[in-house]
Image 1 (cartoon, rainbow, N blue to C red):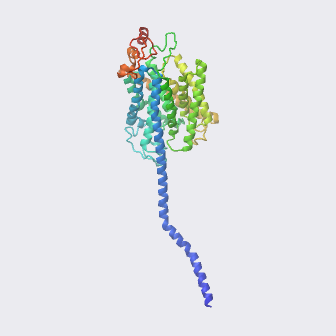
Image 2 (cartoon, rainbow, N blue to C red):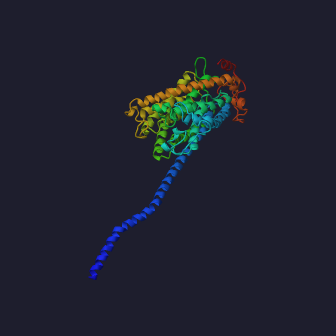
Length: 500
């Protein structure tokens, strides 16, 4: 009997343990739950902070690369122009970034990215003083720069990245007006360019303005940066007129060779390198897959354009002209800037090949109509910026950035995207060229924009800056338009200059 009771007690004890043990475990887990939630939240915060750190680092490093492109522009422009104008060209390319930094800080960034109208920002205009919750993104963002709420970086990282792009647009103008522009006029125009012209046009596309709402896309700036700079350069070159001796009365073109093709070539190498910050950096996020593909499309377009430019120049000129090859590479880089994130690598090759051909034809065309552009800035940045913007409407594929551009015309997307791109090209062109021509005209009336014929013939280095780039190496070239320093002015050339 005792043994039977013992068995029953053991069975009841076991059942009790089985019944109540899970509840005890659950109670322990419940006690640990707040700790688990806290740990999970801490882990999520750490991951979020790590992403912000990675995105910020990537954005700033690529911005530093774009900043270094200023050295490339300075070398290209000075190398393709005459030795007697080297100092003024270097001075322009240096001061333009300083002016851009101040103009974009004071007003430009707010006009471009501040909330407001479809045509320009009206909030947070001055010195980035508007409220901003960066690096919060999407619906979590609270502030006045909502056009940039898609990137999880601090506000000042956004500002610096956009600043180096603004500086690039202003630098483009320098090449087209080289060797005859007053330093003071370029100085003032650069401030107006970055403080007013560039940010208003940029707001339409990158600031959530009317072109963005229409469905236009420009990933890294074929229109926003390069075409805007090209239109402003075209207006300046038209109003300035050609350099003395560039075109004869019979329309014959007199080549004015630059003094250092070595510097120009090194400059293009630097620009090509910097473009790996320009285009991949425009993700403003450490998205490694997108970055790698954008780098590939960027490089492929540049390579294709250099090849096609060399072949076409060989055909037209009888020689594989190096300046055409260099501008060909730049043309491919400009053209792929808008579509680089939205097209395949094979498509980027086609875009680049077309750009290389276009830049050669454009240079020859502008010489034909007597538009003097010493470095081919208008052909590279305007002509190929327009082509790149339209190419996006032809070659875009939705698979690369789902939910953005959709498919272009060549991939079954119809005409919608291409028409939006065309509208953007025309709208930005009319505005930028018109207001640039107005500002150049006002400067011409107020202070003059062109140096005197005597100053132009002697060289702007001596007259504008009081120094020369090569004081121990001076080429005497009396009567020779293409030479370096000349103490005499050919009377026929002087008379032609005064008649302009």
